[in-house]
Length: 84
Image 1 (cartoon, rainbow, N blue to C red):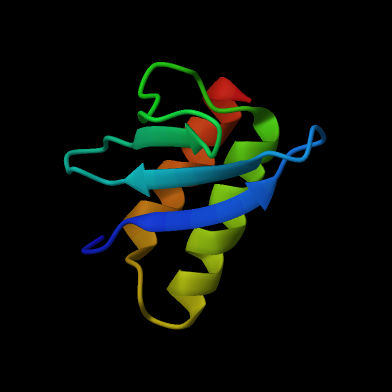
Image 2: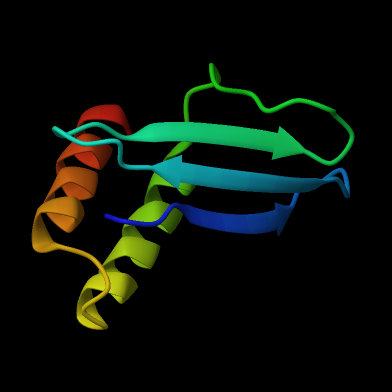
């Protein structure tokens, strides 16, 4: 995939959270998280099952609009089954 996928959500405590997902290649997915009350990006926290569901929904939407490859959708689906 040529571009990063990014979305923002508001957590239960009212803080905005930005999620950025990159596909650097060769079957890899790189997650990045940033809360609005923190200054730096978090690269170490594993994604939640809700994050995986949101990513699959977004990649599926991009695939149907011919903006993502089928292999990217398959990768997200298999990794979601493995991790949550």
